[in-house]
Length: 214
Image (tube, rainbow, N blue to C red; front, side, top):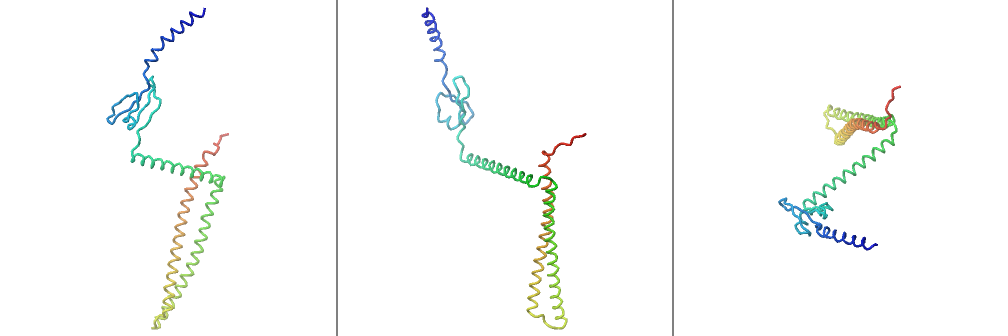
């Protein structure tokens, strides 16, 4: 009773074999330097040079292989990858700094107190420098007066006094430069404080709970 079924199955298998046998094998597709498309059942040197696509017997893409890069292209790709890496590192560093800022100053009031301390400390330094400068200028004025008195008496100014005058002038000029630097630094700190406060407010904005109307 099973022989007719076995015979029928064998016939069906034989009928399907020609369909598989006629199916085309995998193919390689590539474009030449002029953009013309080529097909081949084996991988050619031109395909490897220009890049190719491996197609299945049904014409589906199995995988793609790009053409090898030239020395200039490799250099440009390496530079691009390096810039991306550096940019990612800067972003990670900025994110870490932002997290540290929020952790160090839970509220805007805390940050304002810290920023005010920076200015206050520098103001004390400026005041101390001004007092020292006033003292040095007074010393210079006294030396100048002594030299003027000697000259008024029709005498030559001694060499030690001339050296003291030159040295004191240098001290005063240096002290004035220091004071100018501190004042410029104070202006920069105030500007930086404002920028840091705005940045902090922007960081805190997403964490602020929306105000609900009663």
